[in-house]
Image 1: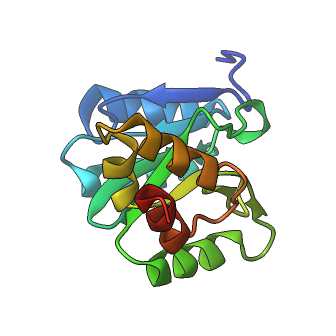
Image 2: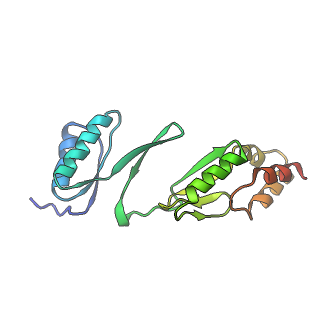
Image 3: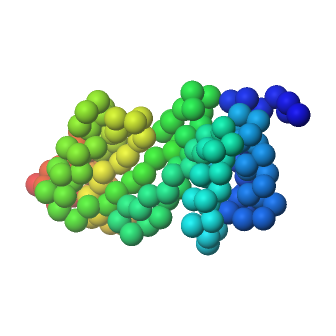
Length: 170
């Protein structure tokens, strides 16, 4: 039966077993690009993804971990592009950490942006910020906050020492 799903992106929740797995494999057999998701059964989801590929479809979901936090990413193909609406923010304790992350993320085609923002080589937006910036931006003295904002607005990669100096009024 041709359901007209060739190259369509299909999200199947609960696809690690049972009806969800059967649906995912069936959509794969129709040539769909299937996002295989799971809640607790990672091994089951991986088995479903293998079955989807064996049926002629594509399994699009990937799981990864950053700083102990699990993420799932979906390859939606050319129809769903990354935008700044989806971004990750990393709070750093030192300038060395800011520098290391910045360098790592802009390598091989990444782009620097303003105010601590950058895009990695895949087009994912990141903001690399000093952890201390939150306290500076929520300080009760509006003049300190204004100085910090004036300091970081022209910056690309944020400079912790310059932000701290602006906060102190130095």
